[in-house]
Structures are given as structure tokens and as C-alpha cells.
Amino acid sequence: MPKEVPPHTTHMLSEKIRNIREKMVSFAVQKGINHPDTIRQSQILDKLIYEYQLLSEKE
Image 1 (spheres, rainbow, N blue to C red):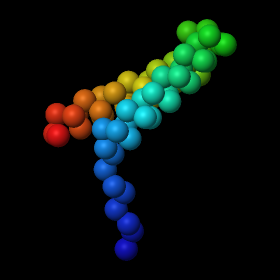
Image 2: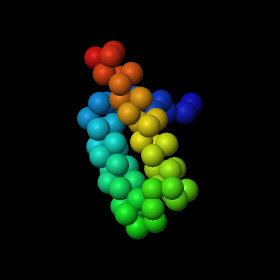
Image 3: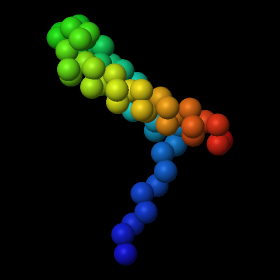
């Protein structure tokens, strides 16, 4: 029987958001804001922020 993955906590998500934001800014400085790597990090960041907002509403 597979183990259940524990749900994210707001603290875990805020750490992930911080890390992805730093990575995105670094890519933007190095590669430009329109580079696919920068855009991908921005998309990941958007999803994490959305997940954080949903989780915050439940708490």
C-alpha cells in the first residue's frame, strides 16, 4: 500500500516560494526576463503562490 504524501504546510510552501523566487531573479539577471528558464520559474512560482493562498484560507 503506497504511503500518503503529507500535505504542504504554509511554512513549507513559503520556503519553496522564497527559493524559487531567488532562482527566478537569478535567471532574470543572468539570462534576461524573457528567457524560457526565467519564465518557467515564474510559472512555478505562480502555482506555489496560488497553492499557498488556498492553504492559508483553510487554516
